[in-house]
Length: 214
Image (cartoon, rainbow, N blue to C red; front, side):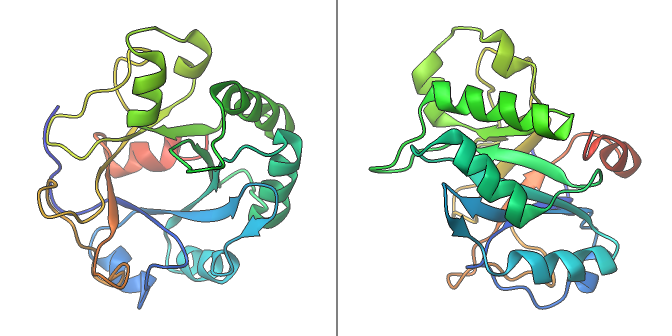
């Protein structure tokens, strides 16, 4: 897989990331923002709704992700849908990663994806990386593989888990010193350490917009 090229097309952020101007980010090539909406059964990102309004006003695509935990899946979905309020233009994603002391199981992740798809009428995107690779190894999971993969892999040569031939979106850096570049987005400085999650899309801007929430 090729290393990312300038400029950053998609970034994913949460309340700990500073945003100074979505319009500036759009003018510098950003196309879409995926914002943390919720965590578990009750967690809600207080910056989500205001930033949604501002990002969409700037002409950016908008997405919402839920950080999965070990609590009841139905209650997690209620929390996510109630706070994220996704419309048919909103990308929706499950963030499945290591959560110390409150780990969502793989079966819970499957249940979340299945039930959320039933309620929305479309499949969510699945964000995952090393955790899933460690759990599945080289096993191909047809159900998980039927979802678009948002791959977390901080390397110039991303490798999806065996259930996918390729990623749909690739989170290639969280701003770490040894990660691929580019690592910055004008208008979105990132967290207090100046680090930002940046994501690569292989296709055109028009194709990304077409596929965004499908």
